[in-house]
Image 1 (tube, rainbow, N blue to C red):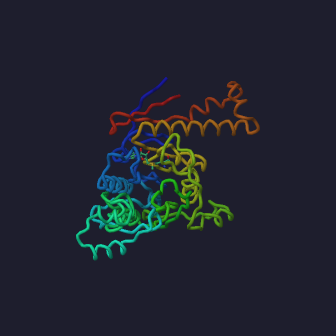
Image 2 (cartoon, rainbow, N blue to C red):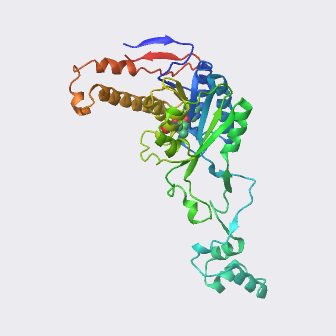
Image 3 (tube, rainbow, N blue to C red):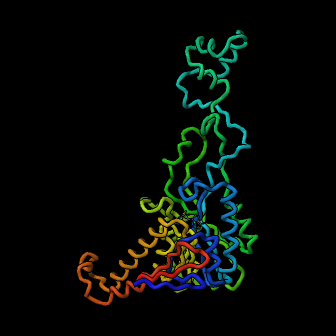
Length: 365
Ligand SMILES: C[S@@+](CC[C@H](N)C(=O)[O-])C[C@H]1O[C@@H](n2cnc3c(N)ncnc32)[C@H](O)[C@@H]1O
């Protein structure tokens, strides 16, 4: 039967439904060893469709400011972010270029200009007739092809997110401690422009690690010698992207937060993700024996996260109790041990839906 409590602070090992700008104020001060998350990227995903660039900047500013009091002194804030590769800039001059590689007809601007000099009264129609091509081709050669996005669309450029994040984190009181580069799968499919420009495809992101002043325990024993050599001391992490985005369209691979968590926290410490999405950070934290707190404003994300966490816990309970048995066998043997009740205790989550300043605790056990 469900029981409802009103708690002052958010509880560990729970996922909350609500806006982090409100719910972060309910995280116990100095209780978080590490907050690791990936914010909306301002690339037009469904959960950010109503957001202007200014809204997006304000969201990040507010979230980072709210983090300072809740991180333990000596603790960390790790932000996974990518640069915006297609940032619309109305002040940007048109990129006009002759796209030689895409030409169907071998006609240059110089040839047309030369004919125009001899026949200054000829219009596009006459020139097209003369060269045996369309008027559009004449226009394109004379006025240039817009290299990206059509002649009449706003031009796009690259926006470096790191500089902006560093500035607001510094203002909040953090110091940039480290940065890693995550090499993911190259997004050829999403990078149509690579065929019509000199730009590179999207194939890496960053993890910016900020430190809150205070005593930081350095425990080299957190990683094995091999782990230090493979990734602990390495700036570049090669981790395949998540291939199936069925439950959430912007998941990061569990290996990414797992490494950050293993490196920067001790067993039993609490890890926060205020953009929990499908629950990846929670799985990473649990797999390393850490606690988590997750928040997301989308009901679908919270449901996906709860499902992922429940499955993880269920699999883990079974593995611990019956290391040699297959899950399918166990599904049919509910009375075999105390595993079922143990699982119920592990899978208690808070889901707050209406009054965000007063979250309800819903115990499912
Ligand atoms: C990039 S996704 C995170 C994906 C997650 N790391 C995963 O692996 O599934 C960003 C998430 O932030 C959530 N979000 C956006 N704005 C929010 C806000 N103001 N408060 C809480 N969650 C928010 C979105 O619903 C989305 O699930």
